[in-house]
Length: 138
Ligand code: YOG
Image 1 (cartoon, protein in one colour):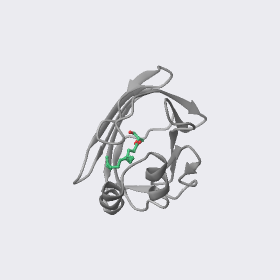
Image 2: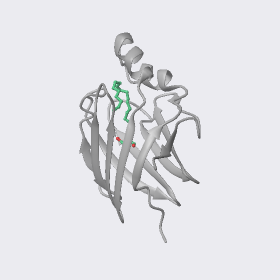
Image 3: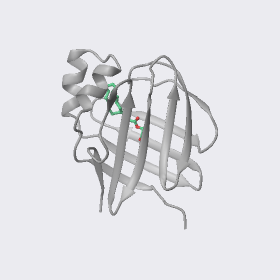
Image 4: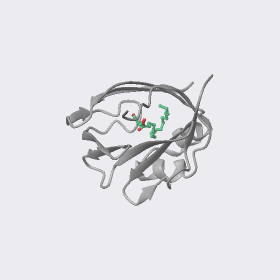
């Protein structure tokens, strides 16, 4: 039985989100707002097809992809830089590499019990393993 990320998830911690946003070149005022947000993720997974909708009171971001198929990502409402993204499985981890202007850009999702973990990477910044958690809603 492959891993299933489907569900509604709430942010519980975002250690070093600031460092990640600085690496992405997000301006001070926007970072101040973004740090305070408690975004929610709705993930719908059908095998290798994913729908990940991240919502907040400030901005929303929708990502749809199929594992193993490269796609264009526009990061609209985030840093607005276009990149080519490829998501692959590394055992039960979902690993995205975002190739573009920023080096070493990408993210990794994995599950630990009822927690969804997300590591965000950009240039020399990373949210260390397990510092950003989302909890499954009832
Ligand atoms: O999710 O990559 O699940 O897309 C990262 C924000 C903040 C906007 C959020 C809005 C990067 C202002 C995307 C936050 C900072 C700051 C809610 C997380 C950029 C701008 C949308 C992400 C992946 C993995 C799928």
